[in-house]
Length: 287
Image (cartoon, rainbow, N blue to C red):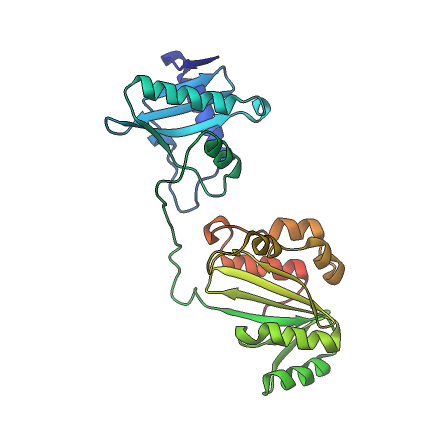
């Protein structure tokens, strides 16, 4: 049964608010807003869930938090709480209820859409990078210890003496990002496995993995950074952990953990950091 929180429930309200903030981390550049939590009303589902609202003008309420403890999920409490919130707003003479939800919080987005909530405006964000941090750079890494063969074959593609570095079981060839895909494909004909690994516009990490001239996997950390793609293309740009593990020896569990995709760069580690993490799991050196 849903009930309005009373003064005696203040500790429970704060506890549920803190649990929400721990589980649903806010965007990294925002300050902690725990001390700013001052709803006009909180509705409780026993001790297992909460929805808190504040009035915004004469005709609207805003949902500040909806939270159900993990052990109580799957029972429809979230939907009950939201319906109770709507009824409270309606009784108070409001015409609408608004809320914000992180793009990355897909379960919450599905619930709100099921209840009829729709996007009425978009709040956009961009990381302010230091000068030079928006650079595009990368290299091709060839799985071989024969640097001479790689140097010779790379020179044929680049039409210049390549910058080649031998590190462990890989040979790295530095080149313009625009040439990495072609270079990796051609080098894989001669040496087997090659991967073009790069950062694009300081925001997107991409790799293209080749085996004997055939592209076997392509990953982009933010598939739609440069514009909308068909859903199938978005899915295809996720990392294939099985293929990566088979060809590079990477731990497939780590591939899935590290090589994630997102709708926005803000949902992932900084591109330079993610670039190094992916290089590490592939076993290649970036410098």
